[in-house]
Length: 352
Image 1 (cartoon, rainbow, N blue to C red):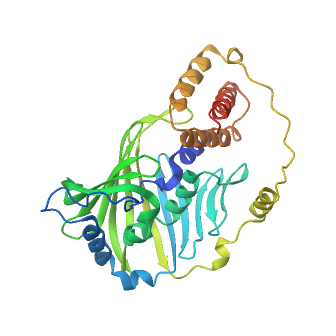
Image 2: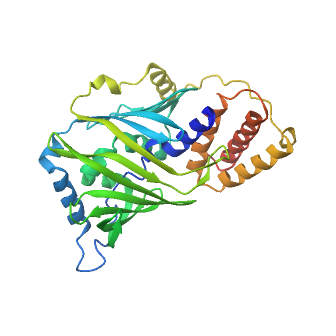
C-alpha cells in the first residue's frame, strides 16, 4: 500500500469510525421493545452503565486519555485521543507521512492533515470528532450521549453476536444510517455493532474489558467491513483492529484542547467575515489528457463516489487531495487530480 493510498484510506474511514461507535436514544420516543418478554431500551442501557461501574463512578470521570495502534496492513497507525467532560476533544493519528489531527475546544471544531488546517463545518465532521475521542464514554455512559446521535432506537429481539447471547437494539442515526447494537445478556456490557453502509454491513466488536478507577473500559476493537474500492479506486480488505496500549482517566492537562494558532486565525477570519485571498485556479484537466487506462479508472471512481451522499463525497475529496499532495508528478497523480476536480464540480452543483 502506497503512502498516498494509506492516507486516502485513513481519511475516508474516519480513523476510529466514530459514527458506528455512538449509541443513542430516540429524539421521538420509539417502541422500547418488540414483546413483553424483552427489556426496554432504558433497562438495557441502564444495566450496561451499572455493569461498567455505575453512575457514581462514571460521573467522577472528567477526562480520558488513550493510546492505541490501528492495524491497517501492511502498516500500523498510532492513534492518541483526549476527551473532556467540558467539551474538549482531540484525536491524533500518527503516520509516517504526517499526522492527521481532529479536535475541538468545545466550541470550534477543526481538522489538520499534512497539507494544513481547516475548520470542521459539517455535522458529520463534528460527529466524527466527538465520536473518535469520546468512544469510551459513549459505551460506558450511553444515556448521556444518546440524545445527540440517533433519531430512533428500539429493542429488536435477541441474537448470537461474536459467540455471546445478546439483546439487539436497532437504531437510525440522525444522518439516516441504520445499525444494530448488541448487549451481552450475561454481562450487560455492549459487545459490538452492525452498521449498514452503502457497500454492505460493517461489524464492530468491543473486547478485552479492564477496570480502571472502578470503571470498565474496552481495550480492543475489531472491525470487519465489506471489501470495497477506496477513494483512490483500489480494492482493500476490510478487516482491522484497534488495540489500546493506554487508557487513563483524570490525567489530562486542559491546555491539550487549546486551539492551534492557525485555527484561531481561521476562526477569527470567518467570524469577522473576512475572506482570505484565493490562490489562482489550477488549469482544468480534461479527460482526454489521461491515458486510456486512467480514463477508465477515473470514470469508475467518479461513478462510484458520485452516488454517495454529499458528506461522503466531501470526505472522499479531502482524502484524495491529501494523498495527491504526497504523490510525485505522473499519470497516477493527474488521474486523482482530475477526479478531485470533477468532485468539486459535483459538490458545486449540489450546493455543497
